[in-house]
Length: 167
Image (cartoon, rainbow, N blue to C red; front, side, top):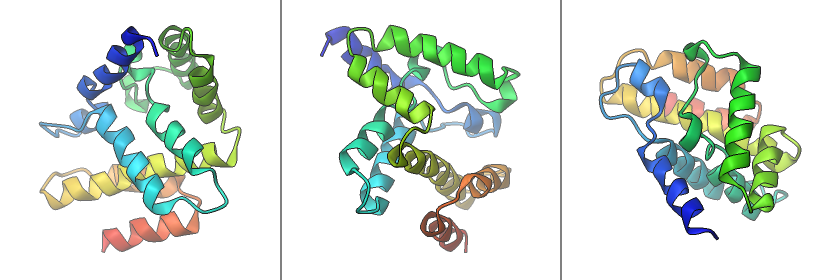
């Protein structure tokens, strides 16, 4: 793997999650923290019929273009199509010389497989669980994130996990 790609990928550790900043969290998690959280949830929750290696790969790389674009949220006033275009261009730049990684990222973006659909679910679950953690620490306004997670979850097992943690 190209050393530059390795360095850029690690820079995701310095890319703060924008939603938490907007909600007033002083020391928000990074996008890398979030991706690690999804990977950890994948290890705990991946159904046996899915390819765990692919689920972990998608978990780790799904937000990598944000090292270039930053963490764009619906509150940033950027259309969904413009966000997708910016992230696709960033993926082209970032994964230059690594078409395999570009293809995995595209698989996630386009929900092309059961593994990609599952990682999208984990993405929502991780946000909801982290919002509950922040709420327990005394942060206000976390219901927005929990409700967003609930509205995006379709997997009954993952819904039950969030509901149990909410109690």
